[in-house]
Length: 370
Image (cartoon, rainbow, N blue to C red; front, side, top):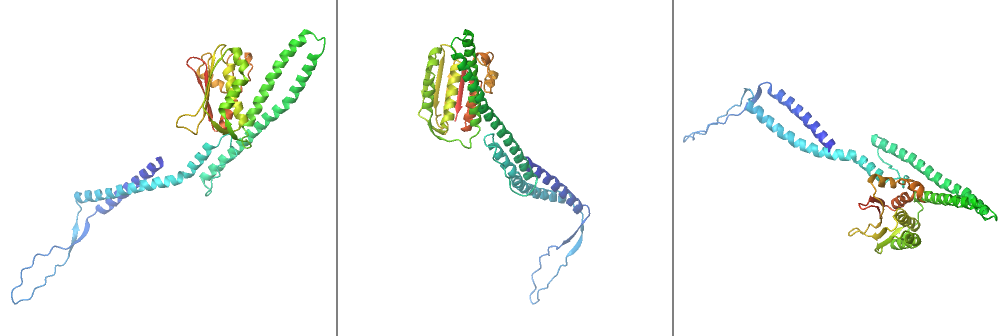
């Protein structure tokens, strides 16, 4: 629109200057005119005489243009200019659309590219000009980003695998030391503390490996997965913890089959339930549901709500970041701080998103929209 208005304004400005110069050149001197006076009516021929043919010669002379003539010419010129302005505006719109078409193509393709499909390129075709140069620059940037992301994924996966070996050796040595007869009581106490640390390190490594796996979607296998069954399995596996905390569980599900990776979706549901149980109050409640919004058959929502302390918007935003926990939870809770990050990554792989919302009565509402 701005380009079209610019084209139209430039055309109007140049057209006005052109007409002004033309009118000045035409009307600055008297105009040479040639005219034919209207012949007078001839008398009836007399009887007995032939008709007399009268010939009127054209007369020539000069006349000075009047203001009425100038105004009439200016009005007609303005009409022609207005018509041409409308035509030029239409042509300007068409030309601007053709010129900006590569930019729209680049914007559309760039919006589709994320860290999950950095291998895609704009690949703009056409003559070598500023547009193709911009597309080539963006493709180069995408290539560098892809290399950086791939290096990060390989580092996380390789480091997690490599750390498993020394952790296994530490756990074996600890078991051997604790199993020796006649050991001091301090050894049992120390062994329990070390086991807690090793368990936490194992959970952290599992979380890092799962995050690295969610970012490698090219080889992801998919199948029809029953989301209500995954939710039932997650709640059943944590029945002992739920009973220990005396939580009231409310479950509402609809029969939903979703096509995705069953392992990743199971991890998503497990982390949702774990987060709701771990950050709940003793004697609290937990509500889980799987639903399809009315009129939106292409969307599925997994919603898990739990009671708990009041949370601010800033605290909720902090929870969605890796390794972030609130206040004393960093040391008092057994989690790794990766649960919600894993949920968000798995949801994104399945073309969905994670929405976190603090409840007015306290607690958290976690909604995954697939």
